[in-house]
Image (cartoon, rainbow, N blue to C red):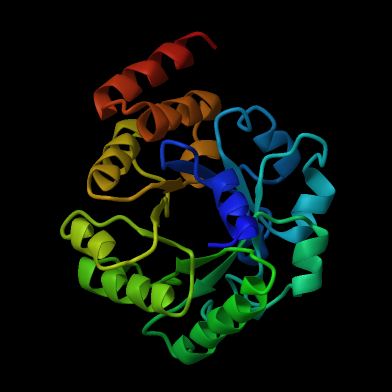
Length: 264
């Protein structure tokens, strides 16, 4: 691994080998998502607890302070919306020159394995890897499922993660699944980061799946809605950091959440 690639990955993945990414890229297909109407205000109190931001170039420029900023994973795929025909019909939205201009530590792109646009999105990934490897910029592949939540099982996720790694992704973001997640991770030769997906019913539920996934080999999380849509986002971010970086059990992290919540 060349110095530049190693340096960028070290900005994202901490010395303990773990990471907590905070995604605020939802607006690229959802518009003004609840909790992200003013992204800059939303993230301000949370930055102390996350390791990197996953964000589009537009929100990065308009809402994120460049001075002392967290490392950036730049969302570079899109072209669809919630009201469009198919969320999987994505293309590349950002040039390599723009990625370099914005000093991104990494880039992120969705792939939709099993969809009508499987080939298109996988070739998007391959093209992006070809360009980014020339400049030692790591690519994070996001194994997206669009509106088809039924696809979140170990067999599907294992297939999607392995294909993304085979095409050159340096990190893969995927969903946790209750059964067989260890096989998903073991079958992927690059680090796996867990996505949050829709909000969970309780904070403890979030902490439990994050803890379980990390016990089964994931290096960390990329959670947004379960943090900034929570009634107590700072307490939630701090509790997640405890699980990811401090080896806290779900119960211990939940106790921390309740303690911090009560101080508000």
